[in-house]
Length: 254
Image (spheres, helix red, strand yellow):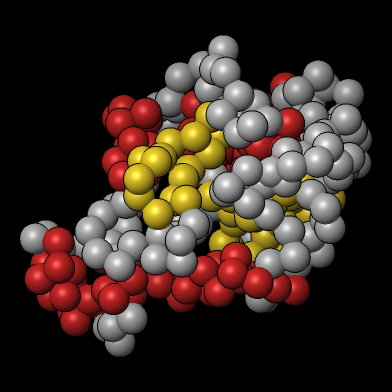
């Protein structure tokens, strides 16, 4: 059974049997992979796995009472850089470049990359990457969704999930055929069987959402590891943290 436990991060206090969902952005909007209640995605005896793609994050069929993991930065600072991103980069070693450094909120409020990059340098002493700026629309949508979501939402980076499943960060990129093959194999071994294709989403988005769902089950069970700076709260007062599972780790959500 998947049991949710709340903390100051917004992840429940009472034990609740519930499904969990992993969400990732995709070309069709957002893709969600939901693991049914009772499926921990670990022993190969998996329950139903459902997949949905919707244009808007708020239109996804999310499990009430469950946990939602989202592959998108959740929580912005008024100034400075998020420590969680630095910790995630360190944890992934050579694969750390896939974790973008996320600048403070005023930067995301700019109308174009040139203005955002200029303000970022003024506020933090260095610029932001064009790749990070590419997250802007989805990042701000997730920011609004989290504030009013009917379920606890946690930030998860799928590369940390896959690194845990494999025992080490993966050498092959998810954009390569070999990288996708090994990610699918790892999920299958964990008991998460996925369709070959989903309309509106690339295969790597599907795999990422499933990996996030796998970590969401660990968050719900209270066995997830947390990359965070305890004193660094977002401008909304919430903890900024990236969650996943590190094998052998003690539960970090009590």
